[in-house]
Image (cartoon, protein in one colour):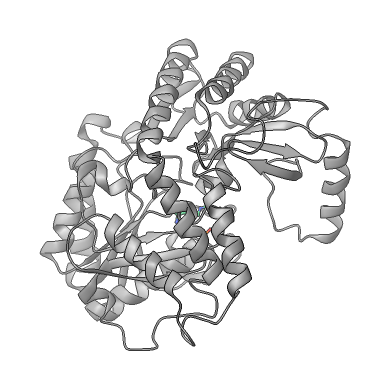
Length: 446
Ligand code: PLZ
């Protein structure tokens, strides 16, 4: 492998985790950094490469979060590093709206080529996922000359004012931060595990309910866009049942509504397809991307039908840093890595290893209510045995146990009872299996 992990791909625990150096730095953090910032693990990073994180105490920790689905190509991936260095030496910034550069154009071409659908597409680049969502909504409103934005329960779209309003969960994202932007309507989500009428009825019932609510409560002709994650990320890796997304796409098309797929978390090979939409072959009008696009540098995109993307007046979109040349260079390195190293297939292979391990665990442990996801984006939902009651205690004790053993896991879910697996796609199989066996051990202990 040309773009390989530079650090030894091993788990190695040499101190208690967190170790003394991490503890000291976390203390300093507490003095210097706003208490408003969360911290999934109190472990301070010194280096990271491939599928491991080395902390300041010398522990080598298996990274099952990839910085929330960002470093899918691995941390400090060779092609990303090389292109970024070349770019930094050439120039660091001109602002694309002042004087353009090829990297931005090339990333846009790649997005137009890789995203679902063979129609004529165009792109615009931004810095964060939330900013991509903001702009997708701006574009949809301008194109349709309508205002209403339809989103879903358990959805997550960001922390800016508009995207906070679009995000479902109050704590920690919204509490006390209102007022939120108007004209945002939240619909029931097709969540098979918790659908009142049962998983089999979920797709049809949910679709009927959503359409009914849009027609009766908003009026379809007032809806600018429907925004949905093909698999909900922060909400707990909720996979809508087959038929739900195609039904929404059809309803959107029939009613002149812009269908926006938020692929910030699902995009770029994560789910075992290049995009989450590919699984059912749906073609969104607009698609938002970020995270996995650029191997850790801040970049985001909105890509979609040329006539929609071009409906905005010149100068209506932009930002000082959007599509920074350095982030674009990183994206070109990341996209090259994904394509040349077949990371889509790799996500599928990891997916097989993960789902067989998780299904085995589900048979053994009654606290596992549900196993779900696709490819390298899978999760466990914990319940109190024999009930549907969320088991948050189990979730947090399992995450703690794994961290002490040198495995970093991320939480998720509206009810705080989901553990999600998002390994870098370049992680070697043996390391992935080791992480899964420690997870198994942790669940047995819980
Ligand atoms: N849309 C689907 O997953 C970011 C949030 C981490 P930004 N998810 C991680 C946190 O707690 O802030 C996300 C996402 C989906 C949009 C976003 C927003 O992307 O790059 O964090 O703005």
